[in-house]
Length: 313
Image (spheres, helix red, strand yellow):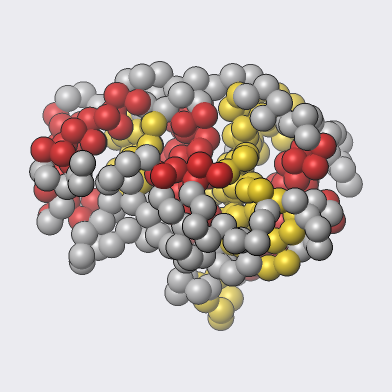
């Protein structure tokens, strides 16, 4: 069972890692299509205390298996198992991923996804690096159709590919060749709204959106809420926290890869201080606040944060 190979880099090994991920996404799509009610909940929890579904575990297994088979990945880490796991001795890349983003909404038949980032491998195993060191990233959505938003390093473009699975092998076809996010949008997806009780800056931004004709579109799933920005080429996703309602998003597995894709497509990102990609990695369970999307909308976040004295510079 092999997808048609897509050349996403002039470097054969990097293209091979991307191909391994696409193959895993093909298998994940089939797992999710045949699970009942989103999959049964297991008795286990991941390191973050989230209950795991059988589909969570199977998607993680599929991805790690394909990465190991590629022979190009030295280590991987993921949201379900946030520690570096050796895959292939001598592999030139590290992959960090969220095997199934949106597990909490899968039972309602909302769209869920897989998020992944590819990094160059070295002895640091990413500690001390930042999101600027990502070499490629992707986000696959398993909805009414299975699509992947992926950075094509060969063409320096963010693209959408769609899975066609009727031939029992599955192949990916290009369906959006050059995603370019417009400077300003009118769609917003705000997460963790409970925090606006105490987070004055976040409340001011969201009140502006509510009172100035922005359309609220929020599913509770980070992957679908950010991917709509790519497909509509406008909009903003945000999630900030306070002491009572802290941000739970993981840097390596969610925030960094999606911020990388947004910035490669002409958008911007913000973590409350600077670009999300400027965050220095200090551990494999690191969390991050985030706003991503149309550049002018993200600049508005920065201006409001500055007004409230929340920026260091």
